[in-house]
Length: 463
Image (cartoon, rainbow, N blue to C red; front, side):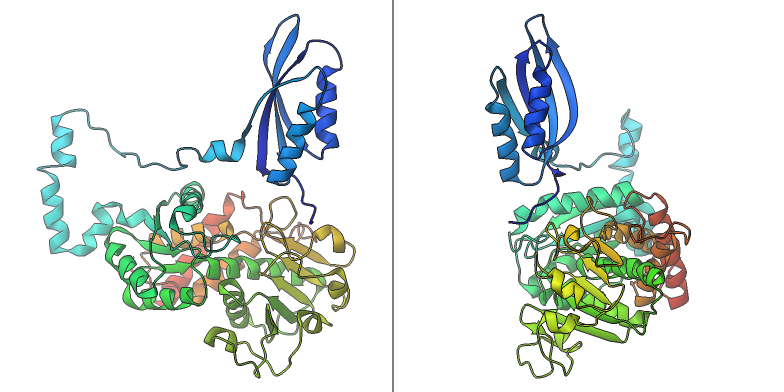
């Protein structure tokens, strides 16, 4: 079993009663620490001469770990366990987003303008000039976050209802980081034609489409067809968001080790949506030596099981991931937990760069190779160098909406990556800081500006 660091995604609050005498609270904190819990806030709820009632917040590493921590408290003598609640479940209870009116209806006049009969004038104006929908409706600032639930995070095909909490979260991130109104659309079909037709039919409401958690290879066809058939930006975040942030982090990591992108040997493990998109963008950025592996090993020209997307990156060499990594400069993992070993890392070239981005458990635990790598990055927030798509997609859509882009281009992705990388000043660049924090308020603005410049250069900006 992989030992994980306690983190807020498995956060709980334990309420307990204890005698009001010295040392009793210390016995509880020691029990929690002994069980591996990470202590947070301790709140006094009620106190008398005889007892104290307290809440204590604890981060665990898994559901099973949380149960172990709770049991450690229950086992203490003189401590009365009251209850426990999962803070993550409580945060999601009732959903995380809502729709609110921008104007108040205080009198009949307000109602007559906002709705009937005044709204009829707006309908006629849009019918005569459909472009007015961008000025007179929510279309100018609204994104559809669309999924079929077939590839939810690293959890697999769980269906549309199970996808809804993730899509709600995505909508939150759009609002918080870029001021964009986004709405989750979870489709009860995994048929490619049905998904394309459904998105086309709802497109009049939205200024852009963010595709999310749709499995490969269907995701490639769905995005390609929607891009051809719609005149608004379509962006599959699992592909392009991951690729943009990976390129940004790799750009800075290569600066640290003084290696040029066009000369390094790059091994990508994972040949799904993210892996293929990363490889494509790296090629556009100048990479020339890319070796991609899937669960069966290197993508080799002799293999008969390759999709068209995988065949793009097939090489003459055959072998395993371990073979591919010998003397490699860079490992980029978008695959599965534990597939990378310390021995594989030690077989790489000097000053290796390892991005183990599988979530929540990376391809290798950073602690195992801390002295063997020049730069280590993961997809997790509890390690340095978090590769997180939130660095890309809010700014991408902010820029695209603001210039009314008809489409998204590779140049826009490259410029977005450069903008993200540039936010780490040379004086601040080190092995634990090759990418800005996801909470850096400069990111979305910088990415949006870069996207708008590229859109105008590519001739896809309409305002």
